[in-house]
Image (cartoon, rainbow, N blue to C red; front, side, top):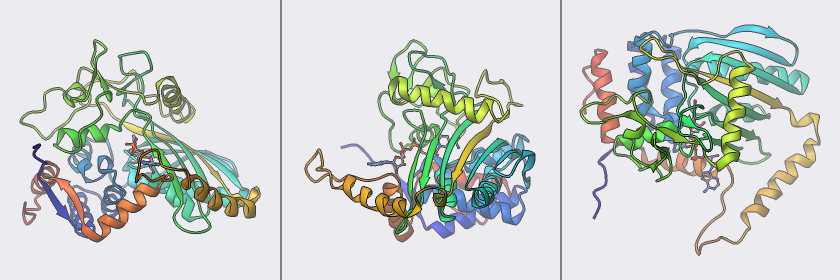
Length: 366
Ligand code: NAD
């Protein structure tokens, strides 16, 4: 029988507090440290461990290297009543992204529609958080995201890295209950899922990676190079690439994320990536916000609810199966993890504790 990797279960509030202390010790002001703790743990609560606290060692490392900056704000580069281009000054994504979303919310509330280009943001994590923020304000939102200098993904038919994992996200507010949130990377799996697998977590699919000679693989070393003896996972160090999802269609969507979030915002595309320790990686995001009131809001509110029920009424393909709508798996995982705690791979937990110790938080114990 396969041996399951050891896990450590931590209550969400305790985990958020620990991450907050780590980033306060690393130089973030109290509000920013709290935001980082909150949003990383929210990703774990949603079931996206790839974008949760597994990122703590990497975030402190990029802060130390000056690739991301503590305590930044948005600079507005250009602006009209319903459009803006904002620069994140390489600040933490957990600070920069909500500011950009709030700008979109304010403009869409006044004008009915708003388009916000964001560039030079530190890692903005799980994009569903930003669609949820807009949905809480009653707005539909659509997000195209790329990663400047972050190429990891081979295009359809290729083996060389040309895209980042470029997430695409749509959020729909509902008259009742949680919003619909479609939120996925345009690679077969997000890079963080390879990171989680490399720490002994859930394995990735057999066709998630491609070697330089065109073989499909699920071995995280294809992306990171040799794994033994280190907690560090440097995706620039591996010989191969992630693969775009969905054949030419997913590859095309990834391509357009680069064009909209990288070229149009001026933040830059994922490649050709710079090499070396000074290499700075940043998210770009083009977001569209729509107020339902500008359309047929009453029809929208009623028919979306009905349509969700209709879709869910499809007969399952497998006995005992169930049809879920976008956002539903995350809602369920959130409820379960709020009640029972967040299970972390032991290696992930050890890396967080080691990071805390490096920053002088010696009371944190394994
Ligand atoms: P994924 O493959 O788990 O897909 C998630 C989406 O599919 C969600 O909308 C979910 O509700 C829906 N879904 C999942 N199972 C379903 C089912 N059985 N029925 C119906 N719908 C279902 O996500 P992923 O591609 O691994 O991405 C994970 C996270 O990584 C996302 O939150 C994304 O924003 C984030 N990400 C961020 C960056 C960045 O640069 N900041 C880059 C890549 C990915």
